[in-house]
Length: 243
Image 1 (cartoon, rainbow, N blue to C red):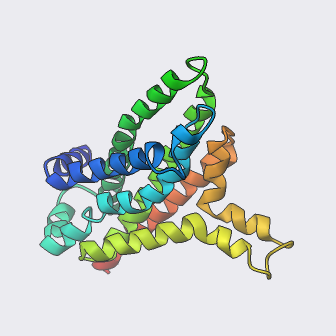
Image 2 (image 1 turned 180 degrees about the vertical axis):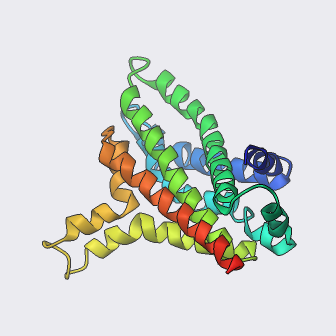
């Protein structure tokens, strides 16, 4: 499992696609935070990184499916998934290796954004006038959100041999589970009745809670439960081939 994990990491960085994906992510975040007037930090009168954590989920919606779309779809298309299954690896170990590799890659793409934190830290008046504790919580929420989107991407990749289909399916499922429940809660049938419960089923509610610096065990349990659900679904998708 460990060798497969490192193989996934190496294959990502051994291709131009890996560097392009990371460059597009950083460029998109950089433009939104520093250039585009609707989001630019320059237009704010106080030092904050709220723009980063508000915009990042939208960028993740396309970035993470691009990272995960090859994980299993390519293996199935090239027939190498059968080779993996001849190794002393269970289907769960294969899925976990690919999931953890994808999640680590998401974490790696977040590391350069610490430059934005440093820049805003220096621009503060007085210097360092930032709520670093809340920012740390927001980074944790963003990393956990990346874990859920990665699990969704792995599941989507396990359903098809076509990488483009895997990308589109992962983006669609990520959108539904992030924003879909919030939209659903606004329907007249739910407003004033169970709209709060419907919102809590969605990822956005729990992400916003952590982004405000509220590190509640219920939010952490939610994130890991959704990850486990999609990892389990991907495992069942692989086992279905044997059936």
